[in-house]
Length: 134
Image (cartoon, rainbow, N blue to C red; front, side, top):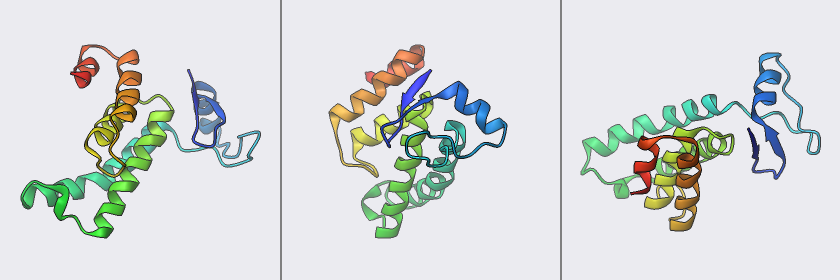
């Protein structure tokens, strides 16, 4: 139930959820940074960014190649939000982030990084998560 954050500190997910429910925001003991949003909130933030981009892709030729620079930056925000949720153990974010690394969408393409996130999701999930590795 613990995860490593991008700042290299370890976060106990249930403890962090409890602190968030009490309205406590600044709890990282070493860096004194605000407690990052919960995994569900981060994942939803990524969804708010990705849905308009998906609509643009569907209306065009179905390719991300025609995205503008600003739209590509938005795809980077999606990856960042998903990464935050994935670091906190959110399975759906781990799956989607693995797919983003596999395809190089919003992140540098990387098979190893893709496999890491898909494996983390598989280790927590059932058959539907394991299908992501096929």
